[in-house]
Amino acid sequence: MSILIFMTESTESTAGPGFLHDRRPACLSTFRKLLLGLLSVANFIVLVSCNEVPEGKAPQDDAATGYETSGHFPPESEWMDLGAVLLAGEPGEWDHFLWGGFAAAILKKDRSYFLYYQGADSYRYAFDETVCGRAIGVATSSDGIHFEKYAGNPVIAWAPNRECEEGAASLALATGRNGDILAFYGANTALDSTQVNTDIRLARSGDGLHFRDDGIVLAHDDSSVWGAGDELFPITAVQINDTWLLYYLPNMQGFSGKLGVAWGETPFRLQQSSPVRNGNGDTVRMWGTGSYVKPVTDRDALILFNNRQDRLQAWSISADSPGQLGDALHGFSLDDTAHAIVLLDRARNTWLLYYQTGDAYRIRVAPYGRPDLTGPLSPAGVNARRVGATRIELSWHAATDPETGVAAYNVYRNSQLVGTVTATVFTDAVYEYSAASYEVAAVNLHGTEGPKTTPVTVPPAPPPVEAAAKGTDQDK
Image (cartoon, rainbow, N blue to C red; front, side, top):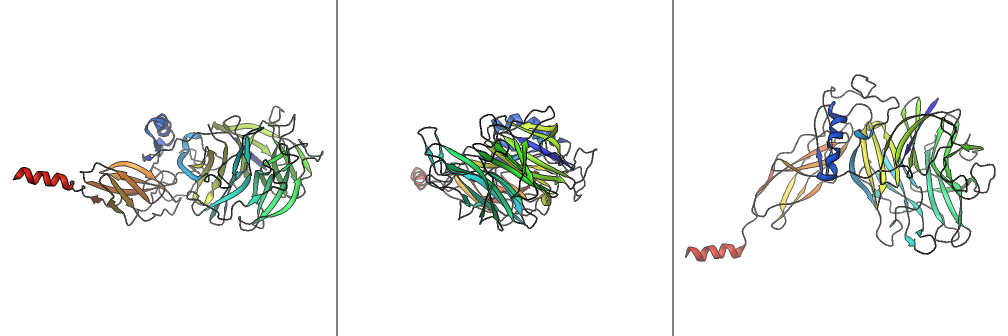
């Protein structure tokens, strides 16, 4: 069986307040490339959707249209940015800093999405200038876009000596065949106030929220483990047939920044390990996060984010030789990103890319196979009211889209697009003495806009009382 490894490395958001849309599938890649240069100037998200493909057809391989599902990973031109889905905590909260390691993972269990992320509560300026109190938390969602942080965060923590640099510093997530969530995490343990070593521990959960620690699976001082001696950071894991594969990053002199893999029959018995080499026989350079996906039934994929190279890259490998990569297959650059993780949501025929930049996690989405060209239903219950002379507040009920789901809402004033939001509220700034007519349209995850709502009109603001009084005096 063959496996794909996608190595990722960094990206700057091009998100903005609006979506533009076209409706011909041939325009999908070309149109987005054309408008990409406008994003930094015009602050718009470009959504290109098309409708030459018959509505309601399931995704399938089709060389004539260019849409395929057999191992295809979308090129950069097919991804669209939907903005922030999770923000850093306030000062003093456990996740005020969203960095400090490689702990980022996304999975879908039943109909819920679980976004696991790195957090730290404070910053140490002395010695090496780093964050303190590293831990792993989770945010959940019913649609993969609107996330809510779990009130019981963090869900994985490690601080046996209560030193600054101790903590859960990296994460490799997998789902067992019994449905349990397995979290391999890098556990920083202090040697003194400035030095740590890192073992790989395993924690398990049935609900994704409450984890039980099962102990060490790879020890930093086990000489039989490739790259052991100081720190071992797990970044992604998968079970292929009867073999468990755990990819990790050793941080030991001579090994740091290189990719390793351990494997065995169970997650507790990873008895073999080796460097991961490319087709030239060189050890793969890697420093970042990872994900596992299965594009088709007979192919697996690993997506790795290398934040030192700023590039997403794919290789084929054989499951019989976990430490050997084949030829590079596909890749593109992702700038200014610390973490990036990918989920293939087969039920919605959509790729979801979550990436952390600055104080937020953001999301990009792309079609899996043919785009969903049937727009969402029109939102109901649109209400618009003037709040002060120059502000109008709008609200509406959530729309539905049975194929891929609703990604955002376009808001129109007097037939002109004035903004795009993922929430069901919008505030508009207007000239105080003008009337305004509003329409709202939902947009699905593949960029197809549905019908607009019936216009709702807001009358102009009444003139100030003083002005009315002066006019009366002049009449006299």
